[in-house]
Image (cartoon, rainbow, N blue to C red):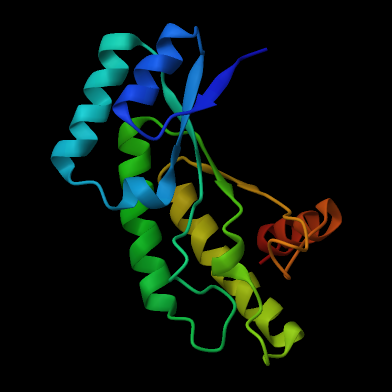
Length: 165
């Protein structure tokens, strides 16, 4: 068994090391905004302290819409291509895909149409992750957080659809 902690800052990273964590988890949307120099700082920390950044959470910032009629597939592709390159550079192995606000069905939109758009968005995300050796962990969120895929069964269906695409 391994123990890890969410550590979105240098101070928290060091605290995780001092606490004896085996790995740390960073916020992917925050890492997407880091400069090359800041990514190098994180890599230096990992080298110095030996606690890998194996996992990320919060895959998407709120402003990227994955299921809405006004989603932008070019933006999704560009964001994930750049992000997964950075994550792989840092050593991330798994990125948790919760991001409830980014994937939700907007008020007034057809849920089935949104789900179809979401499936194609997930396919693009998965392809870009795969190119960089990163696995995606789909996180079913409770209905108070998101109105699109809330159960393990729904997450499994999304995975199955992407495997067979």
